[in-house]
Length: 235
Image (cartoon, rainbow, N blue to C red; front, top):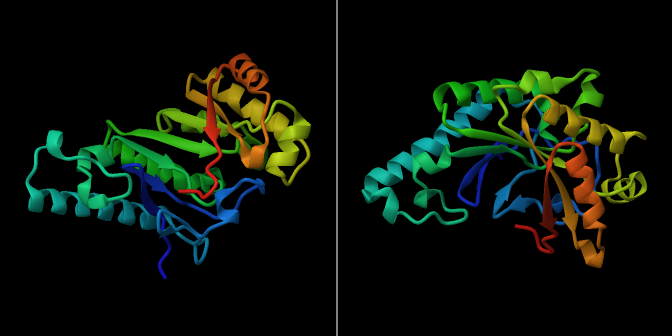
């Protein structure tokens, strides 16, 4: 089976670069299923290149264009279904691209940068978002946020708790100072004027966070705040 590097969710293109992660979150979707709306995201290997991703990306757009020619409908009449490529206009597919899959996308940082450069060059109006656990600066021992300016329009960073203890319980990080690194990463994005959203997963098996405290932390770090309700059966 070929690696699924590009997939569709809610009418948007998502990019699945790796299955590796520096967290082992107890609520992670991949603990319970192998797919997102029927698209298998477990990779056969970790050897995919930027060109592999770009080829799959362009195939998505080509399929969308082919379908549009067959249907010959104006965009205003073309309802976008959540996970149906045949109903998606190419302009919608390139409105926003999200790096997010069954792993931490920043662990394939060089591939991510190359793909983002390609998309920004060929489709300059595309918004690029990266969903990340915020560990990249720790992993690479440098502030990689500086290298994302002009490529990434927004980071969505998993804050996942109002304290280190809560974060460690939920996220199961593989190094000790992970929570502090997450907050540093969020602050770095804000310092570089890159839009950043701090997110938390709420309601996992009846568990509730102190959302006011989490939101205050996000605001103090210069980030917007988003609550993601836990989806019991995933997508």
